[in-house]
Image (cartoon, rainbow, N blue to C red; front, side, top):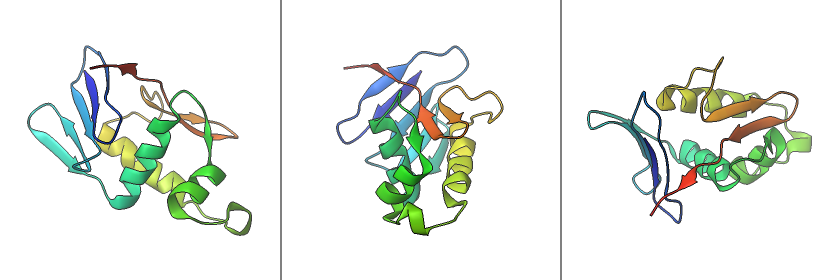
Length: 118
C-alpha cells in the first residue's frame, strides 16, 4: 500500500510486498510502522514536482528550473540524477526495475500515476 499524505495530494497504490507512505507535510517516507526516512527540502520539492506530474516524463531541465531554480541551458550538473538516486533508496526502489520512479532514457524521470484515495 502506497499512501501520499500532505499538501493536496492523497493517493494510494496496493502492492503485495510493502506498505509505503509518502508524507509531504512531515517531509518523510515511511515503510510500515517501523522505518522512517526524513526528506530534505530538495528531496521533498523534487518528489512534489514528480508526483504533481505523475504519468508524464519530466525532463532534467524542468526539474532544474522548478526545484533548484537554475537555468538548465547554463547548467551542467548531475545533481538531479544524484537526488533521484537518494530518493530511490528511501523509497526502496530497485533502479534496474523501478515500480514507482521510472527513468525515461533521453528525457528524464516519471512517477507512475497513483490511484486516488479518500
